[in-house]
Amino acid sequence: MRVGIIVYSQTGNTFTVAEKMLGRLKAEGHLVNLDRITLEGDPPRSEKKIRFDNQPRVDIYKDVIFGAPVQGFRLSMVMDRYLSEVGSLRGKKVHLFVTKGLASGWTGGNGAIKKMKKICEAKGAEIGETGMVYWKDRYKDRMADDLITRIDKVL
Image 1 (cartoon, rainbow, N blue to C red):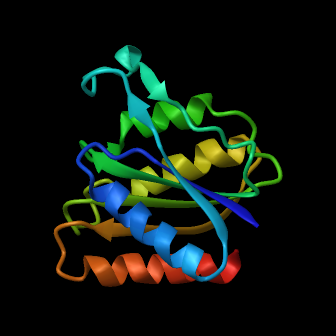
Image 2 (cartoon, one colour):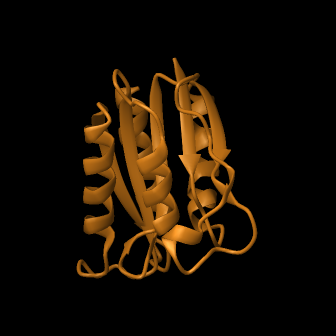
């Protein structure tokens, strides 16, 4: 089964989780690619000023894993914009994850996942596994491993 991991990562934390996911899923025998959403220039302060350098395609995958950071207590505006512009997700199973610095429940992680789910469902996706990795937590590797294991079981 062809799986696409598509992430936006400004500082590299989200990309690190995605790389770990790529390695584990490949080791389990999945045909998987990792693709990164990139911007022209520095990250803008306004969604209107976002200019993509790379907007990965989703049509070539059966399953898609989207990953993004929580920024300013909400879904990264880059991922929000990317998902809003991505084509149909009809017939695809979509898994979602976010990374964030703070483990507190009120710091935007649940809201970010909820927003990603809403956009993806509106485009016809079936939502699979979701998860958060608290980057500054000493158990971040365990959180990432748990998420990867849950995704692997349903692929």
